[in-house]
Structures are given as structure tokens and as C-alpha cells.
Image 1 (cartoon, helix red, strand yellow):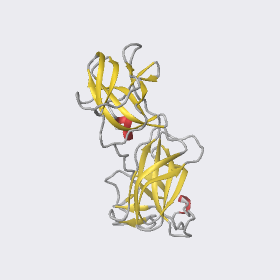
Image 2: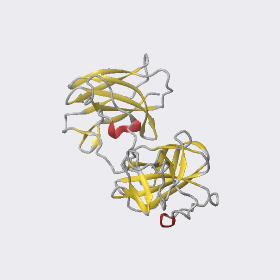
Image 3: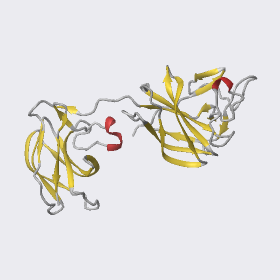
Image 4: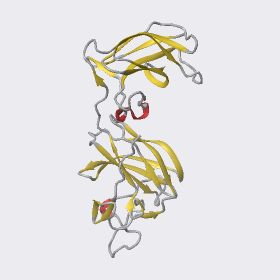
Length: 278
């Protein structure tokens, strides 16, 4: 999964972007320079992934802080942190999959996620960029750069369009026999994949099997299932394009927008079906 780009932000009068090779505040602050909370790479870090389609909240994959802190989410204002639209406290140490709820405002295509110390009244966010020096909850700076990252939230196109009749799937309800299910018929406009997932409330869950197919009509396709995974009563079966490295399935549910082997869509509907196996 691709990580978002590190944002180098300075606070000299107003917040402005720095190049990665820019001025290192920690090493040589000038008179009047407003400097945040200096931290080492070992004690402070943040990791956030792109989250296309995010609306009410985003998730910060990992954050490490030396003391009680805040995750602050801002709209992007021409490459600079704009209006703050989300705020979440985190304890000292490592936190993973931190959900930050967002205000009900129209989001920019990307958001800026910054990490601030909680050095004033614990549990109360006390930071005003117009009163930087007087604000106790200043942002962390690591290696001369503000601890912040970008995350893209604009919806990206998903799926591979196919004409009517070019891609389809037919699977009958059946028990699992010899660790496999049989797909009655799978049609694809080019070399492709039949991919089987657990059914999680009508949505694809963990992948449990896949099988390469040829262009055209493929009948009685056996798809072996992972014996280490406990199956749900229903499975979801889809036809995916093979657009990356030929013969290698490249589809990650956690990063589906960036995966080359996305499922086919015909008439706006995914070429997929459910099959009862128990």
C-alpha cells in the first residue's frame, strides 16, 4: 500500500510549506522563529494511507508519540494546512488504526494530518497558529520538519469496464468438494482471474481462492480454497482483469484502488455473484 507523502511544514509567522531540504529549525532557530516540540525519529512518527471515498472519518494507521498528544486533521489549502476538520487525542507510545472523526464539511481532495503535543490542560486542545508561541499544544518537529502527512480522500475510479457479454460469471450453490468449488462458467475479454472471497454482510471479505482463466468462455473452472481459512456459508465469486504482471494476481483489498487486477464491471455492476456452500 502506498504511503502518503510527508508534508514539511514550518511555522514562521504563518504556516508555510518547506522543501525536504529546507531549513532545520531544531538545529539553528533564528530570533523570532516559532518552533514546535522537538522530538526524535524514535519517539515520534506518523503513518496514514490514502483513503478514497472517506467522509465521516479517516484512519491513521500508526502514530508514535513521547507523551499525551493530538492528531489534528486539516483541509488542504493549496498545499498548506487549512481549516481543522478533525481532532483525536492519543496516549503516549504507539497507537494503531486510530479513527479520527471529521466535521460535516465538504472535504478537499487531500487532507493534512498533523501530530501535536498535549502539554497544556490534558484532554483540551490548546493551539492557535495565530498565537503560536503562547499555545502549549504545539506540533511536533522531527529532523526540522513538522510531523505531518498527506492523505488523499477523493474517490478514484474503480473497476475495469467491459461491454455487455464480454464478462460474466455463473456459479451454482454447492458443497465444497476436495477443497474446491466449481464455477459453471466464467467469461472474460482477455486473460483474467476468478477470485473467491468470504461473504461479510454481502461484501467481499478475506480472499480464500483464485484461479487464472483464458480469454473467452471458460467452463467448469475448479477454484481451490485455502484450507486454513474457516469458510462462511456463502462465498462471493468475481471475475478480475489481469492487467499487471501476467499470471500474477495483483489485487489487495486494503489498497484496491491502486491494484492493477481490479474486477470487471458491466453496465455499472460488478461481474460477481454469491454461492451458498453449506
